[in-house]
Image (cartoon, rainbow, N blue to C red; front, side, top):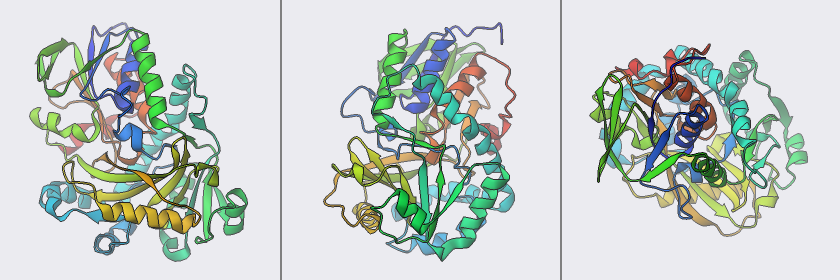
Length: 419
């Protein structure tokens, strides 16, 4: 434990990263204010912490910086029926990201990412359990595991995933088609095999959980200012300033935890971080959540189904197209087609949603101090795992701010790797 105590912290972002970080700081008796133009308690709240797949996925160590995927990217991009799409009007803006991605798409980088994703993923569920025991999670969490299914088409990729997870000691139980159908009898047998991660769990309402943690933060004395942050400055060695459209606020330290929207602020701080966004979609099939017991992900199609309080949520696909392009009807149609392939009994859908996953080209998040401004701490870039990593990121960042010792190696998450 450190004897130092930070006097005040401003956190930019009221999604799961920001709220968990703010709450952990409050538990250390550090005064905290969260800033966001969107209030998590607003019933119309529709950010990433609302619309994600709801999976707590401690096993998800492998990402897209894999040589086996690189060969398939052109094929996927030019297919209207694949899990990957590109908004062509955005290609020129993604060039810096693609250049870094190609540098990181090799076996060595893949294993480096897997190792350091595993370091934090391995602690992710325990970090959540710590917070979840302080709120009422009735009808909000189910612990029935998560199933992945696949066809024999890409067995080389499947074998690679299995080996990397085995080498890291991740528990996985393999299932034949019949074993999957025993667990989920309503699925259409369009797959050849699968795996269940029995220790995984899922949210029946990610937004419901976010709201509970946010209320806990407010009830324990945390503050929230509903305003858009225009910039952050480090004024001197122990003071930062958060500037909104109306006024500026002074804190000893500030945290940037606004997901895909973080780049605007880091660019102003003079850090050239190649953060971009993977656009993900969801739809709901109302009153259909009882068709499956637990989330099912179809790897060949890059999509999944999660039973939620709003119905059965079909979620997924990756679309590269930035923050400003309108939603793509083709992506929504793709999701619906995939969902009905697995569950032909599905009827009409509702709630078409588009959200933004903040993604870095090496698929590791940025967690730690800004390279040029030590009192500004980063907590963003968690791509598909923002939901899973919320609580552990909060613990790590609060520890950095309180200057506590850690036995984790945090250097791989530093922004310095891009500068």
